[in-house]
Image 1: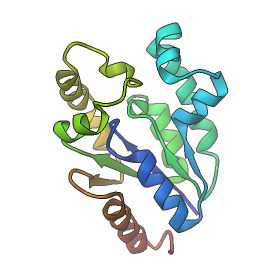
Image 2 (image 1 turned 120 degrees about the vertical axis):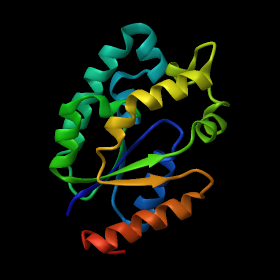
Image 3 (image 1 turned 30 degrees about the horizontal axis):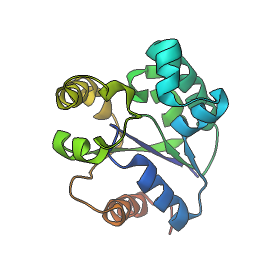
Image 4 (image 1 turned 45 degrees about the vertical axis):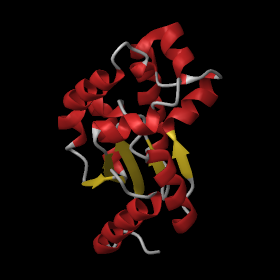
Length: 173
């Protein structure tokens, strides 16, 4: 059975939705960012600060390659993981890819209280959100399914995903 892969911008609900799907379906959940932090024994902001984004993206690609070999897992990726074609190839090999979306305003509302978002530690974080969304939009559009999480509860988003999975007959509750 295929993995359920959650992609999307930071703050769109990948980790929260993934945990709930894991509870309902009984699939183990893996969060790529958490695995990277465990592997390197430092936080994502520390990795960015010490080694830069390119190093982080290299480690992320290796981690995605590993987790893509799993079966019947929920995989939550980092927001920028979609920028590398090798990540798409690995995730598609054994996964149904759902992109979680939200408006820039909703994203900012969800993440503004957290300082662990290195790409938003800039003078104009709302502008950064809009620009990153603009750049990443063509990549996010490549997902198998799009789910708008704006103004929705975790349960509502999970229900949408489960309905799609049932229609695909790839997963039963």
